[in-house]
Length: 564
Image (tube, one colour):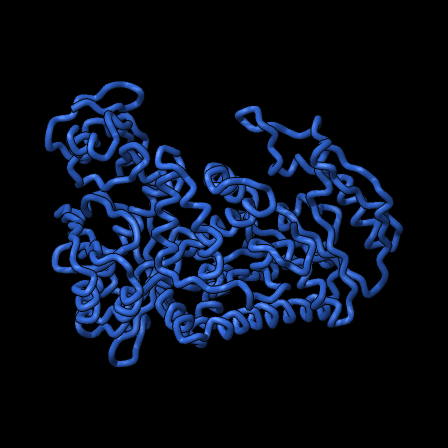
């Protein structure tokens, strides 16, 4: 059989697996191969490559074969799932029947954070150093033995019973909403579980990891995304972790910490209450921020966060709360300080680099902000993106003693942007949609998935972009965030989580038609199918009860604020 590989014909023996081919070409890659791709469909390495007869039946004669490494996003997530299953099995091996609940909460940096409750009421604090070492050694034994991750299709009713027997109550509840009659279950040795996404072929592929604990939980650290052969640092960004912990506690307090719990609430007709509770929690948090800014007598608020965090809506809601504590707020977008197009730096591909700091007129920004803080009258620029030049249209501003500037933009937390402004005048806020909702006990929802779906819906509504175009641009957007935003997040005075517990149930109804429009031969097809499968977990929720001042309105439309 002949397949196309790197634009050349490749002879494949009948009955060969993707793994056997991957081993032959591994030396062509700078990171371990962990998945394969036939045409636009991602497949696990243990699968047998279909013969020509099967391919013709599927309408795919001589498709292109390619491979995914642990350096790629899908490959890194696959490594993460493999490490998670190995850890869960090792914990079960060491503690067995003593475990009441073992849950993957979220990812922080390069670490996955797990909480544990034992039947005697204790938690991670009861785990001794020698027991932690035993857990790690057990995982290393799986690696040395190269134990296989075995996928089996079983009837969904049988899967639900399996989850019930093993105390996986969130999975049991979730699969009551599953539409398909069969479910893929993975087995590693004597441990069985369900995972959303692909798995490595064996434990030997997951050979770089470490574990450590705090009083509240256990961290499983895996390699860096962009340095897949290096162990990630045991570094936990304290402010981000605290923000995620606070919203997780809140979601547990209202009884909606998993998709199953959200679906149950929607089914009971409580969707409106969940929306109102989520909005009230955010409004309370923003109000506390405004009071702190007032108490500390800060004159300029700097807001930054990754794409689709809801920065614009947040800046308006914060401005209203500042008014409630006696401040008059003036929102200013850093985007209006772009240099004219002819002065814009270019990236390594020769394209305009609008995300680098040098794309902004930093000197003008500092001159005008300093003048405003000194009580001077200033004419602010408005950048004309069509012409690529700043314009002055009589937009003047002068602020008094009880007035504050609210600055929003990609470089808001970088002190090089506001070098002339005294640190005592600045209040820095980092905003991101860090969802506290999990699919179930052992499957988390990546923050990036939440934001990608948000951006897709907004792009289609405000810019006329297809989902295909949004997905194609997404990795470039993520690259800019890692370079210009994430390194400064811990410099913030405070963090704000803009994720709403209900939003994916609302976004589902907008995103699904956009994703279904991506054709099977498009490079973005596999990502579209992944997101569609993800959205299948949710019951849909009408947007009619979403308040007009909600951050979610920035994406679905109908906002009371000028957000596009």
